[in-house]
Image (cartoon, rainbow, N blue to C red; front, side, top):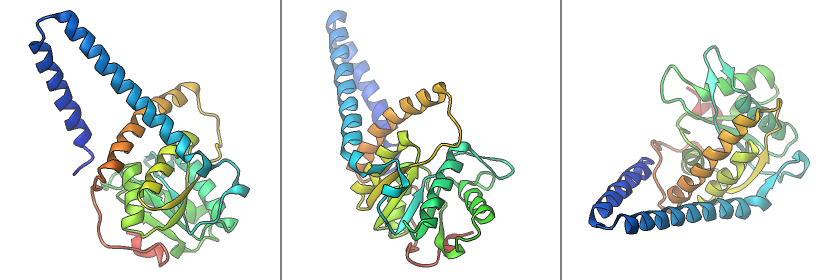
Length: 248
């Protein structure tokens, strides 16, 4: 089952509503029915968001000193640019993640992201940043997940491919509840650490993130419930071994 199942489900619901509209001769009754359906969907999506945030709150940390020690740091991918430049969001995640390694709160780092085509490569860009700026981190401690096309796929593959049993997920605050929720539901003893922001993001960007995250949490809830398979799996590369085996 692919992640696209939600899109197909949405299309099915729209077709169903259209059929119901035709079945209702009284337009006022149909309008009331549609309004009730919308209200039910809104309330259910709000419940999912509240539940996901509250159920993961105790596992999320803003202070590095309070983060529990884990085997691995998981850094979900974010946008990169031509020429090997990291977006600010991705850079902040990597910097905060490597700090956990430097302070002994984790032993390995798993960089996950989109490397689905030759012209776009989040994971190698992230790895090169670590190699150039943190030479003290051993090569074998850096793992790369080239098929982390979404947060769900990152966590699923962390467990299934990299055999991660416990980890600290490092990402921005808005993204942590969903990340930790998915990881823990998939069997990873996960904590979350808020990536330290190197710049102040504009209010418009934060609002865009919040809206997208609201919808993404609903999608993640169903993906976890139905144990949706990721785009790719492949052979296992245990996080306790040599990370260079995951390099390309």
